[in-house]
Length: 131
Image (cartoon, rainbow, N blue to C red):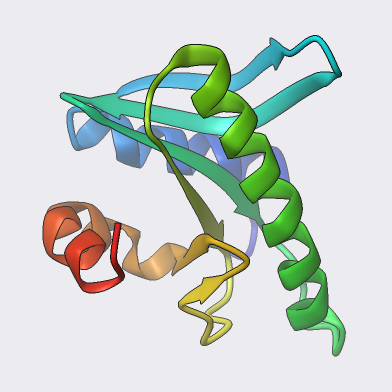
């Protein structure tokens, strides 16, 4: 994983969702009357829509505060997605490193090494965190 570029990291996350039988929209672009948005990976399965922002930050000391700021932006994108497509959109940030964050500004944080387990046990995780 260390060798992956941020683009390859996004592609990896896309492929993991596909493997778990999600219909995937990759780098989905959409517009509202106010502005345009892009979500890295959108996964649809049954009535579930995961809107994923992929973050491959380094080990810098300001990474945690950067992720919190990005969580607010991603949450707002997901609200816009929900309104534009009339589908409940769950905001998820998949991080390259384990940042020991669970939920911030309405976004669920999932370290990339835990993504498979998260998807296998998705209903339990979403119930546990109140989604």
